[in-house]
Length: 589
Ligand SMILES: Nc1ncnc2c1ncn2[C@@H]1O[C@H](COP(=O)(O)OP(=O)(O)OP(=O)(O)O)[C@@H](O)[C@H]1O
Image (cartoon, rainbow, N blue to C red):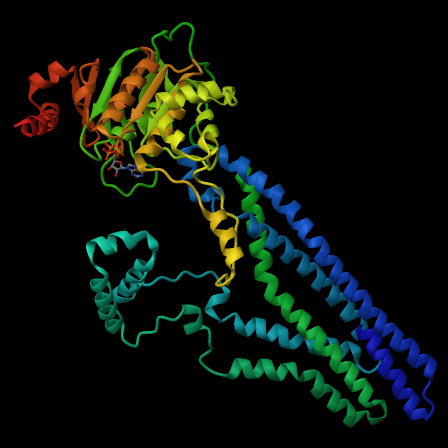
């Protein structure tokens, strides 16, 4: 287009100087310019048409890649920040678009340089002069703190207070703010902190530090941008015969276009580095090795494993969560044995290490020192998939998946995914049948559907409002009902017939006493005499079935034995037990 514009100007100028404008030549130049315009529009339109399809394919490819790579990570590895967990597939698409843009600008630069160099009056000099301003601005702006790596943080306590108090507008706190009547306090405290902050700027650090202390760099950049004009003025003085307004206009156009393209490309250099880093991070995901190393021994071991389930032995086991800032280990020098088929109850105060112990026994984490043996050989020697197939774990943290309830329960035993009879039996065992019956769509209800509706300025648009309301309406259940549904998934897991070790880690915190009693009873029945561990704070009715009670405190097993033995000892366990028994004794008075 630059070439066509130049040609048109020159043809018109020649015609004016000769006094006989060449209408054919002018027509051809106009047509060339117009065709360039048409071609450019078609090109842009095609890109807009192709881009969404390309975006879909690129994003679908990388979404699947990231899904696979993330799902294969174990717990300690996925907690590590260097596993590409911060990557989002949109970045990849943007990077792709960005790189396409860089190539486009490189092509543009080459064509602009080629045309500018060919200009009759000082094309090469002009090309070089056009580069001065972008180079200078890159050099001068390098002093700007934001062009290199940086980290900034706020340390002003009043500023942090203002930010924290501002968060109270979130819906999350509404109920407690109203119930606790703390709205007035929040506003008062906000005003105090705001006043204390005074005139200290709370603008973004970019805005505060972006400007240079003197105007000199900006002036230099501006003047260097005018170098092609100065050059043209000088050549008009020294070489008046080569001087013409047309050549000035053409050179100006070329110089401006060139300067702009080079500036944009220079600014994009750091972006290219970021792109390369992102792509490297993406492909590094495939190289991330799981911290929990798989073993090669099959489980069950025909020579060692008992039909009664897994037997455990812990030898001087210690464990701290990776990256934990706690001064104490979660588990400290723990040693005990659980014979196959035993029903074990683990009790102890909050933070005493009960759940951490379960995570080690189910090999969600590895011990830091010491050893755990399963059926006589180190747990690390078994194939992880075999161990996982033989375990059923139910905790209070387990979540409902964003799928239908039928699928939520079915996934306890993916081999019997479509077996609705089994799903219904599992729901019954988990105490969830009643919950499901109450829901309009029953087992087909999705309690956590992904939301895709997007609306804007709907006020007054009754029809659209009604559609949105319908789209957004979703069923909800109580905390205890959710626990029943999650428990149903565990009962489905029992139906695989492979379970040799079952754990229930406080799965009943939100259940009413009757439901809790029933859940424990059904779990014991489904456990079918295999090794089973219950972690609970309300252990009264479980103790009579327990072969072994482990009382934890500060990451250690302070007492191990049967209910009778531990009560006779009058230690930690009997104290915990008596507190609960006392409550019942008092209530009968
Ligand atoms: N993911 C984690 N990262 C770091 N520390 C953790 C993590 N989970 C637990 N801890 C710490 O490990 C210690 C033992 O926690 P654990 O959850 O095993 O206790 P618990 O006996 O199950 O407690 P509760 O009865 O409250 O469930 C606690 O000090 C806790 O703060």
